[in-house]
Amino acid sequence: MSTKIQYGFFIDTTKCTGCKTCHIACKDRSDLPLNVKWRRVYEYGGGNWSKNADGSYEQNVFNYYASISCNHCSNPVCVKACPTGACYKRRSDGLVHIEASLCIGCQSCARACPYDAPQFDSERGVMTKCDGCFERLEQGLNPSCVDSCPLRALEFGEIDQLRAKYGEIADIHPLPSSSVTNPNLIIKVHNKSQGGGSILNDFEV
Image (cartoon, rainbow, N blue to C red; front, side, top):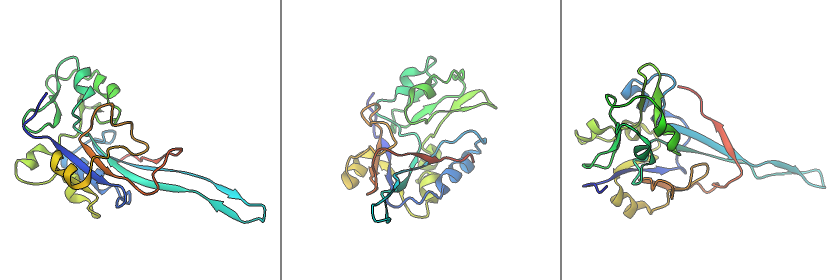
C-alpha cells in the first residue's frame, strides 16, 4: 500500500549507552503497564577470554546497545496476520496502528512480528504497540523517545530524508534480517557489531 509519506527511525548504536531513558519516556507518555514495552533497549554482547602459553590473557569481549520499537515496516507482517483488520498501516504517514475496538487479543500480530513490536495488554485484553507518537507529530513535536535521549542517539522523520542523510543499513545483530519486513529503520552500526553473542539484559520496567 502506497502512503503519502513514510516516517521511520534512525538509531545510532555508537552513541547509545543503554540508559533506557527512551524506554521510560515511552512508557510514561502512554502510561503502559509493567509487562508492556513499546520500546526496548537490548544489550548485546559476547566473546571470551583465553590464556596464552606464557600465562598472559587475551580477550575479544564486546557489547553494545540497540534501542528498538515498531519499525512501521513497508511490508508489515503484523498487518497481514491480523484476522480482524485491527492492525493497519495509515495512508497519511505510513505508521502502523492497532485499533483497539477491533482487536480480539489473539496475538497473531505478535507471533508474526520478528521485532517483538506488538505487545499484549493483559489488563485490557488487546494488543498494543508504538504508534509513532502521532498526536505529538501533529503538534510538530518528535516522538517522546527521541526527545528524551540524552545522547541524541535516536532520530525520527521522513524515511527518504533520513536515508539520504544516514544511508540505508537496517541490519545489526541481534535483529532479524531487514529483508523480512522492509523496516523503515536506519542503523549506524557499532564498530564492535558481530554475531556469536547473546542478549544480556532486558529488565522489566
